[in-house]
Length: 366
Length: 104
Image (cartoon, rainbow over all chains, first blue to last red; front, side, top):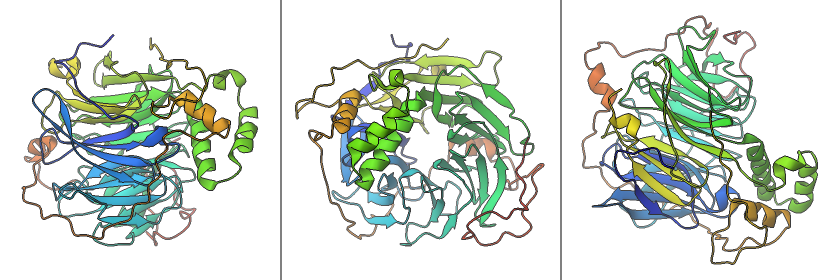
């Protein structure tokens, strides 16, 4: 059953679309963008959904389709109409919510899926960073058609690239090579390489109230906090997920509060391979049969994806787990905290729904 | 202790075109080399337009109000890391071997 929420969740059903990422508008209260894919991102198109709250629920303000699945979305920090998405076909798209059709621009350089895109939050910059399975990070100015810079160094797929909310020109990346890397645009390269886990790192985020603090979430099922002034060991570790941590986000209002979700990564590896194979138009069936031979039959017999719901944590508490929110019926990895309301979050799920709600742990004073 | 959730076990039969396909059904279809029902193929191109002009002022972030009291903007403080000998071009295919990985 649901953990108690501060009020009823607002829900929008989006048939045939599986959400990957959600982000609240920095300008318009309650406006939410959601990057989604058809068929779990395995095949078919993608859709960018723009939602607004109405009296009792959520309404779809506008949607934009793309030829391939969309894996992440980021709002512009200098224009309330503008967003960027990234796609399974390796491209980024620039959108204008005031137009009925789009995209305004397409940026095609990455040679594999782009899993992460983020618009810089520091003033005076108009920079977007993208992270790809092609192992590179690219820096973009949306007014320029080509990337400004390509950052190489990761030795495996990149899952997450996030700007520091405090340090201009500084961003973090999380990778399958088990490192968290901190990059500096002015230095045009990496500044710190942290072997943060002995497993693939699927997500990272910056603390909004301590410019030296980041969190990583990894396939080893743990969340770890890192202080850039001394990266020899994590400053905190949150345990309790029984699967790989797929997404972690820090609260914009509460200095030590964060949210995370997890899922059975062994099946994810299978899905990832399927995705790659189907895009290469190789003889898909025989390749899958070969791949399956190497997997444990039990794990794949039902081709099930096991997952766990959102957990909210306060890492400064001796008992850090605040709440588990279970209101979706399928895997859910898109989440964002509201920038206007300290109690509100949004999420988008593979159960074809998007929800905005107030978890009890955020409504009760810490 | 965390209670893991598993989705509904669906019979691996092809779904009717109008219904949403569950993940297990989809993977079964792909495995069998069958057509995925309702697959929407789009060929979408950029319209090469300019963004609609912004009219709203930028709103401060919740943490920016708290930080207003602080003076200089933060810079990247590297503790035990060694800064690279020369930044080099970002186009370099590998990081210089003299850069140290930090941590044990």
